[in-house]
Image (cartoon, rainbow, N blue to C red; front, side, top):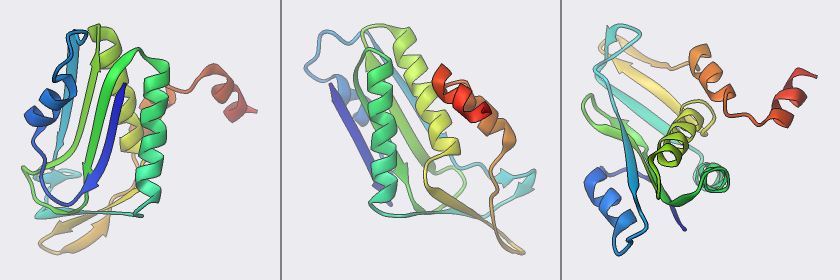
Length: 161
């Protein structure tokens, strides 16, 4: 089982990353890819760019921890997570998640799990740049609610107590 996590400033090639994950494998029956793209608006207002910051070392370790969790929870044959940082303009790719499995259900579920994690708990800070200045983007309650569905029963019980 292959797991790759990279944080990088430069763009990535989603098709190449998917091809690398299944190269030489005859047991892969499903590859799911998700590419997050920088929108041209935030909170219904036009933006010039997003700047993503992270804590080097810690961010990779946290994402690797969740990648390992996905590998534990689903019968994956491999996964790749690439997250960009720095200044990203509308239309630019931000994040890539690729999951490979023998069957589509596991590949889809693992990709969904990883994106919910990246959206809510990955140690990134986003600053939006508009023509009138910059501001930090706050977490969204809807994203947190979506991520809660992945908590295992013991974790949910502990959160309530």
